[in-house]
Image (cartoon, rainbow, N blue to C red):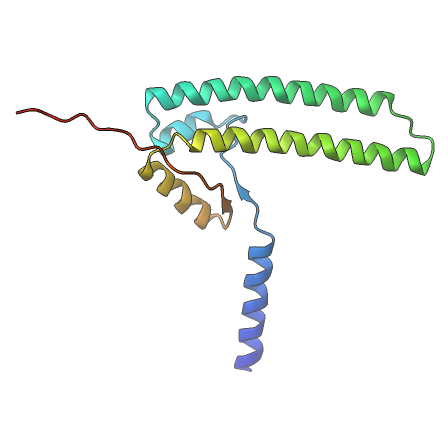
Length: 145
């Protein structure tokens, strides 16, 4: 009985790890205030996040327009046409995902070690795969006596 239970638990863990998703911040979404609060972003980091949000919005809009154009203009009369349409659509969707991932990665790269550790902790709790970056080292001013 114990062997069966152990085997089931191992399979369940393997399945959940194998299907874990990337741990994204979703800076292109509506939760920028939450990101600022949870990670206690400083003014420089907030500026970088806002710039990344702007760049991501432009990229996303362009890709969404390409998707709309593709769906409106691509032939769909044969099975081959539909397969080609699906492949082109999938490629554009992947570009959207990649753009969001890259924006999140750029923001994470300006996190300090404490902020990045908090991010890793939250990813672990959510059973997500964290984006790997090297946190930025901020120099603290030396106080003279």
